[in-house]
Length: 108
Image (tube, rainbow, N blue to C red; front, side, top):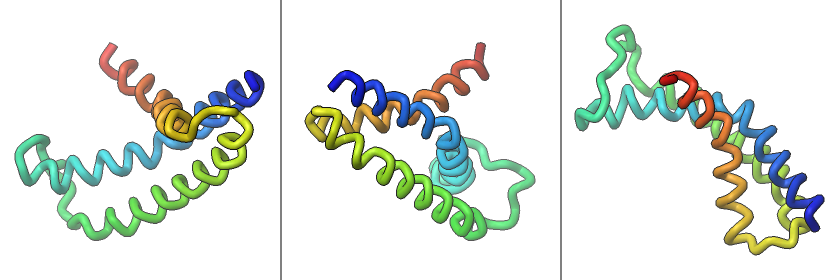
């Protein structure tokens, strides 16, 4: 049982390394689109091609990463002997851990 929980943690941390790319793409899209419209962020001054092009890039990348993440976590979730209501949010947080480390190291 513990071996599968450690496997789950390792799988999600390993997926978090390439997962930095979709998180960054979503942030870039939001910060130059909807969040800039309401005044939460400032639009990139050189970004004048519009946001439709970014949607063409962001949606497939996030979809492929989400499918890979789901397919990798499905079998491990069944074997880890954890409630799915605990496993899936914990897996998502562990996947975001490398992104959080990069954010913290940016400001230190």
